[in-house]
Amino acid sequence: MKRVLHSWQGTAALVLCLAALASLPLMAVDAPSPFGTGTVVLVLLMVAGAALVSFTKLSQPLLATILFVAAHLAVWLLLAGIAGNEGQATLAFFLLVAASWLLAWRCVSVLSGIRPKSQAGDTFLRLLIPAIFGAWILILWEAATRGAGIPFIILPPPSSIGARLASSVPILWADVQQTIFKAVLFGYVVGCASGFVVAIIADRIAFLRRGLLPIGNMVSALPIIGVAPIMVMWFGFDWQSKAAVVIIMTFFPMLVNTVAGLAASGAMERDLMRSYASDYWQTLIKLRLPAAMPFIFNALKINSTLALIGAIVAEFFGTPIVGMGFRISTEIGRMNVDMVWAEIAVAALIGSVFYGVVALGERATTFWHPSNRGG
Image 1 (cartoon, rainbow, N blue to C red):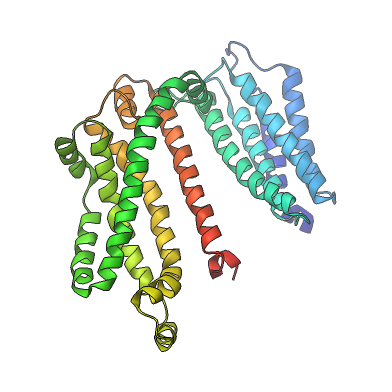
Image 2 (cartoon, rainbow, N blue to C red):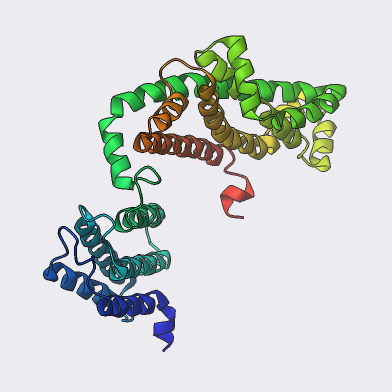
């Protein structure tokens, strides 16, 4: 009983498998090409067998492998069979998809309990577990949209979005060059750098600090849709106006975080620096800036997201016939929702990579900080 409760995902998967068996067939009787008997039997055996195996005392790597193979092979057979039969799935189909998902959940739980002896094994698991989690979001999305026959214009399946991505690489690359390599990168670098420099000046001049920070809080609350048209009027329709929006959006988070970080060093440390006859700049470089690095990188990570959002939204208000925001606004008007989702997927991927690069830089720079030492 204890083992059954410990592997409750396997218990639930077995119950769903039996419920699916009682609810057969997997498709409506008038489906164009229903599942073959052999496929149905194979899926049921794999799901039920893997659910029963989850109660055994196998080694964790072997158990995880069996669960992984069974869950993904079963759902692959289910999704392959639903192609061409959209909207014809019955309750049994969704029960088996849910059972496969529970097996994948159990697989992730087993993987999370493995303690690798090598750094390579630890890195592999740290990548594999979120990859399985992310893959199942797409799998469930695919099963729901195709199995239930959700209209394409409301929510296209991931397979259609992936096909559109593969067929539109030149267009997507041109949009990325216009939005990311010009507006986002330029605006991000200029906005963060100027915010950092002004923060140093404000830290040195008290009245400037007291005057700028309230203004920074106010400007941070300004809506993008109000600022973007004004920037377009000032700087034109090309990427310069989008970069200006990004600069405005990234300047004040960097300013506020850097000023707060410069004040984070302890009074005892500052007194010690003064006892060594250190001047302002020596104290700043050797004590206060290192103490402010977590705050600065926090602003860099926040701005990595804000810059991308700001540039894309700014392109809605006037741009050349290229750019991610332009493509989204144009294609949604043409009801090409798969292209819109393709642009969204590319933006999400680039934003994640951008954030990850900044996070890696933070770990390399602030390795001494307790958050990076596990302390």
